[in-house]
Amino acid sequence: MRLVKIGIANVNATVGAVRSNTDRCLSLARAMARDDVTLAVFPEQVIGGYAAEDLVQWPAFVASQQRELRRFAEETAQLRTVFVIGVTVGVGGDLFNAGAIVHAGRVLAFSPKEKLPTYNIFYEARTFSRGMPFMELDADGVLCGDRVYAFDFGTIAVEVCEDIWSPDGPMRRRCYAGAEIVCNISASPFRAGVTSTRREMLATRASDNQCTIAYANLVGGNDGLVFDGGGFINQNGRPMLEAPRFREGFSAAVVDLDRTTRCRREASTWRSDLEEFRRASARMVQVLRIGGETADRARLAYPAPPAGTTPFLPSAALPAISARDELLDDFYEALALGVADYYRKIGAFKSVGLALSGGRDSLLTLLVAWRAVQLIHPGLEGAALRERMRSSLHAFFMPSRYSSDATHRAAAQIADDLGVSFAVIPIEDAFPRELEAAQAMVGEGGQLTELTKQNVQARIRGGRMWNWANTSGALFLQTGNMSEKALGYTTVGGDLEGAFSVIANLPKTVVIALLERLSQRFRFQGIQQTLATTAGPELAENQSGEAELMPFEVLDACLHLYGAEKLAADEVARALPSLFPDKDPAALRAWAEKFATLFSRSIFKWVQSPIAIHLGSLDLDRERALQLPVVQRTEWKGG
Ligand SMILES: Nc1ncnc2c1ncn2[C@@H]1O[C@H](COP(=O)(O)OP(=O)(O)OC[C@H]2O[C@@H]([n+]3cccc(C(=O)O)c3)[C@H](O)[C@@H]2O)[C@@H](O)[C@H]1O
Ligand SMILES: Nc1ncnc2c1ncn2[C@@H]1O[C@H](COP(=O)(O)OP(=O)(O)OP(=O)(O)O)[C@@H](O)[C@H]1O
Ligand SMILES: NC(=O)CC[C@H](N)C(=O)O
Image 1 (spheres, rainbow, N blue to C red):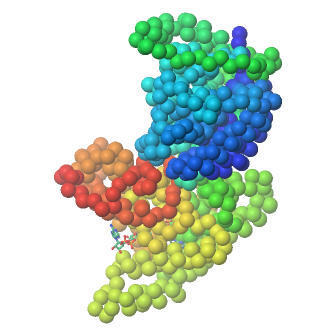
Image 2: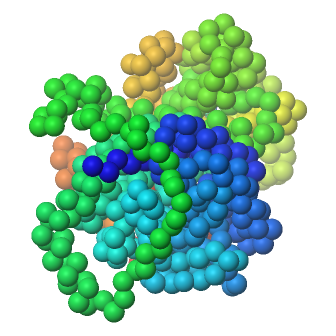
Image 3: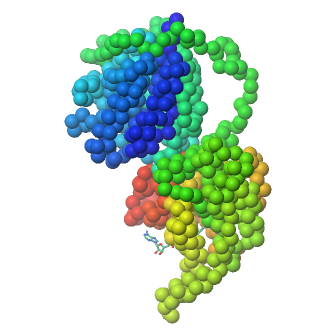
């Protein structure tokens, strides 16, 4: 039996906050050492923050990370735990995204990332160089390259995030060279379904390579990315630990490393693959032997099966929550953390505010902000929290002649349910004035269009919100959803305004499902009242979003098929009847055409929308996610 305690650290790092990021790591390092952790794994780029993007092109930023790494080593010199921690390393003309191995006050080596994600929201190949198999560089006297490291407790390999997302990453050759524990340091943003993908992928890698994998993820928001933290320890396919997500801290589990060795000996397929590798490969990764004593392992206890399970049977308990509710709760937590960290990390705001219409989008944005304020003030409860809420979160209802009593009542009710400040600021005085001014500009020969008359109202609201935020030092939240953004069903200079978009990557059907889930969780009357209203802009008489666009379920199906699956308009029209067998195929065809036309015409709006929280593999963020030209023709579309 060879017991080893592995710690997974989740750190909420901020890009550029090298000193405070390192301080956070140090406090967790000390806590893990006190807990007898043998090997502690921190996230990717935790010292400099992720994603630093072009900031790594500032030599001083890279140098400061190395300085902080040395400080980390010095301040942990008396601890016997081995630490693996993410940092940028510059060697000549190369910059590497690396894992540093630190023990007993020394930086022992850097292990550079080999697979640089450059897709979807990742742009690493733009700034970083790839680590190469068998590479050995000298980073100011420290090895930077491809090795495995033998300590007194066992042999480890270090890789960085995307390295594990390929079956052809560095893990295989390193395990063949003797690595028993593969430490994967990650900065993996939250998106729908990612937890089970990570869990299954890790189990596959750990069994394919007959190794123990320790995976630690970054936590917290930076710009629109929200890292959900958590992590896994998986021993040769057997789950040993799943760390809680959306919180900073550490989790640890004991593994018997002799079991990893024994499993290898038993796995004749793994051994015959190894034989083949030895025959075919000219080189094996070198083992670097590290002297010195690591943490005392005498007190470690043999790992028991998880509570409620036996070595032979899983738990008898039913899942506490359905997969759908779990995902909706994750969306809510990710959105709230995204808003809270944007607020905290920018550090310039005194409060948060939004234009609340009594409709679904601004209601959900308000509910997210309400949770974010709780995260920003974690110590407060009861009356103290309510008091803080009222001074921290401001909702403005700005009715025009088209606003209904139902939306007014719903807005007032939810503000009261949540205890946030609520002000009614009618726009009826400004509306005729602005119409008159616009008419004067158009001149006597022209007539303002009906759409312009609508948009005037939205623009009065947008301008007022900025004026309020400007004086109050407030974070002005934009409330638009993804489906309406996709089709440009939003007013430039109006409801598209805001400093930070909360739900801009959440389709409307998900907005509604999440509100239903939050209603079930919190039982606020205001949610039910809003859900009972017709979804629509109230910029003209009896407006309905679905009537003006198409049914939301069809809109979101088009968004998926066209935006995510990249089908052409005619292909979307061919696919839709499978999803909606009860709807008229001619109507579906017309909606598919309408969707495709409005989608490509709306990209000019996306580019001027605020930074938005990313939640899925399809995000309408032209800068970071779906990079589409604003100027484009659709002659390729098919018919
Ligand atoms: N490619 C392009 N590059 C640069 N500018 C471009 C452009 N295409 C149009 N434009 C210009 O953009 C302007 C039109 O855009 P914009 O002023 O926003 O107005 P527009 O898109 O015409 O109308 C906004 C729509 O959003 C709806 N809305 C508004 C507010 C809230 C909600 C809701 O969901 O509750 C819905 C509203 O009912 C209306 O249907 C025009 O000046 C046009 O010339
Ligand atoms: N009467 C109003 N008072 C304050 N803000 C408003 C008002 N009407 C619209 N807005 C702002 O404009 C945004 C756009 O309106 P929109 O109709 O798209 O969203 P919603 O009303 O929140 O949701 P839904 O579309 O489900 O009714 C709102 O989210 C809100 O921020
Ligand atoms: N930082 C990274 O390498 C992230 C990429 C990876 N596929 C993930 O999301 O987990």
